[in-house]
Image 1: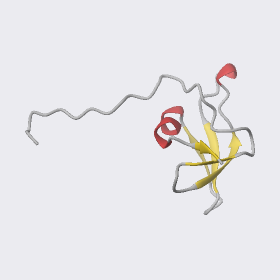
Image 2 (image 1 turned 180 degrees about the vertical axis):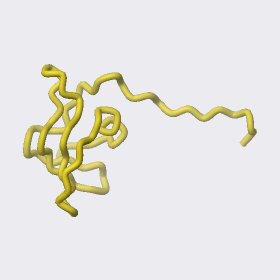
Image 3 (image 1 turned 180 degrees about the horizontal axis):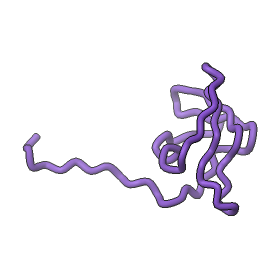
Image 4 (image 1 turned 90 degrees about the vertical axis):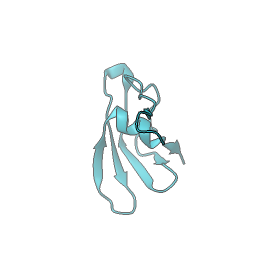
Length: 75
């Protein structure tokens, strides 16, 4: 690859339009299983979601950008 070649990645949307799932639903990124503790609610202006990793039982807040990059699917 030439030194002057620019590699770009797609930019996430300003706000996600998709919710990971309903509260207490389950989603996966293809490798991990998560329980939705607190879903995104665009209408209320909540762009972050709290997900619990089912393997470690740890909760984490994911920003709308992180959610977009994870490409979560409902289980």
